[in-house]
Image 1 (cartoon, one colour):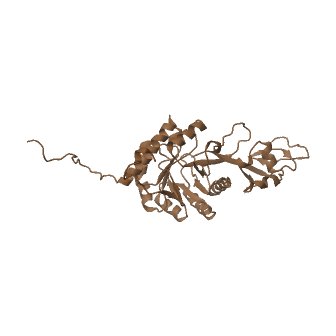
Image 2 (cartoon, each protein chain N blue to C red):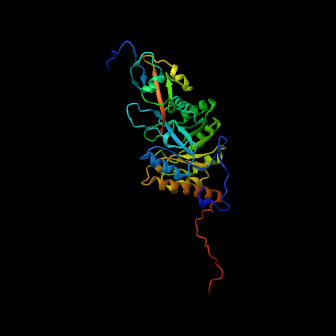
Image 3 (cartoon, each protein chain N blue to C red):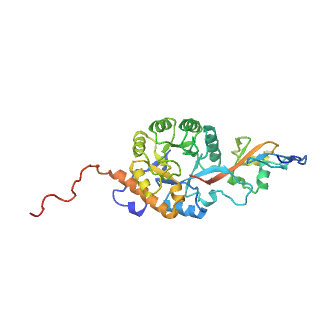
Length: 77
Length: 267
């Protein structure tokens, strides 16, 4: 297990199965920008709830332990 | 329509699923190509309108983008998301809903796999997922076995199309049970699209000769030495098989019947 001693300002959501530290108060929109992922090109699921309205991403504040799945379409049959 | 089929008498009924008329009876997948460019050229050569895609996590630790959408002109193709890789109804429903949230359409190629070695469907779970998704407003195209009873149950459950396999996914074994495929087509009212197992053009032709409404294939193109040429061959084969079905084949006989007159022979 990785060291979890983050600054008191950080929170640790689980993003696509991996813990990631982001600044406290970060929204999912902030996380996507940090990851250089275009919100328009993906679908986000937050704690098993699909975020249908992408305009909400900038108001959804992340907390430690939150599950975030960021998916898109890949080649398949 | 290809030039070879644009002849008198080659008319066909429209291919319609859930009220949408489709311009090609051949549907293709987008997986396993060597490059996006090869995929695009093969899909173009196939003439397909419906192309399948899969839902996966964005790879956040790599610079390369494995997303398929930047390569597919959205006005040209109708995206059909699948639930490949799902082994229970709940997962398949989750993937279908994620795909729908992408905002293209409400169609799903529903797969619920029951076994890792054969990738054969879990038909009990498939029925459960079909009912859930139909109730949720999805247009469900259900990938299933070549089993009539399951096909009938799927139709009853509201599937917009039933997709029996020719043989296991990626096997290229061709249509193993033409009788079952034919029987399913005879008995169902919704379109029957054979999905999986076609290996080469003759397989596609034989499949269409059973009277089914269409074929979906991926590996037969992607794993061919020349996918673009194979895609062209499949386009012709699907057309040929369809036309042969509509033409109505001659009866099979166990004895020869001469084609030339038996009268007028020299003494």
